[in-house]
Image 1 (cartoon, helix red, strand yellow):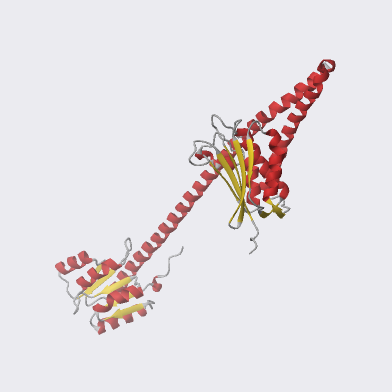
Image 2 (image 1 turned 60 degrees about the vertical axis):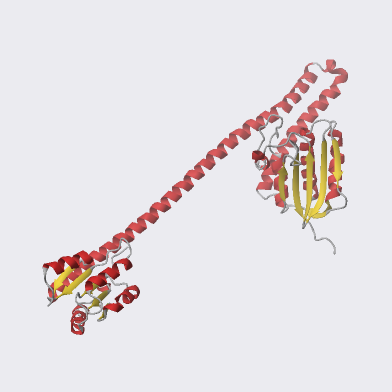
Length: 398
């Protein structure tokens, strides 16, 4: 940032004698100071100051209406804090008291009339040079402060990014341990079954079919986990296109109930849907979404409990809720369980790999809907949960 030439400085002269004004103007303009403004009426100075923004004030002391001392007092509040505005006093009063009073009132320098042209120009140049350096330093200071603020903000961003990377690394490590743990059990069942059939096929006898069924179910579990992990990644990346078509959410809810009734272990499954509810959605993904929510409810609802699947129209949306009488979910986990690999650490409830509800959330969001959980449900009970989601629905016929 370059310092502008002194000739670009703005000079304001205040003197009630027009001849003195003309002398100063001739002297200054003759030496390249073209930005010169003057007044013989001190009452106009504050208004001129606000518009002209001078770099130097040449001020007479003995003037009618308002002397130089009073005028300097009026100007002080107009000068920004930290600014340096030189005031050169030009007066015929050469007494020591006047000099001291002027300097104490805000004057930067003092000259006695009649002025010497050479001395006056030198003092004006010195004051303007000091003013220019001060302005330059203030600008440099502001620039450095801005750069420091930007550096601090960048450092904070880097710290946040580093912390985020650490969290991702911890998540990755936890994910590897979790997937290995969850896959080890079903793979162990498969290996045991294969070893039994390999080492002693005759001893397996009639039990071979049961061994193979267990192995098949375990292998299917591993395949399902791998498929779900891939689909969650594809949904997050926006690489799973939706095949939307008009559908009846009640019919798909009933199909989900029918498909999972065989898994119920003493729980009562109820569909509460007084009338068809139309929506526009990908039927395959939404059916799997419903099955995931029902599967969770069956998993966490004790025998003798009840699972209700309710389908309603909620304004411009279709709404489906799966409510159970299970142990419920602590409030601090209500958002976390919908994140990938989010789990509830509770005494009576574990959400497994943490992929199922993440898949549900991504499917709903891909449709432009919302998903959530209410627990306890109903809110007056000590336990129970209600997982709900909405899908945009076509306008109801008039």
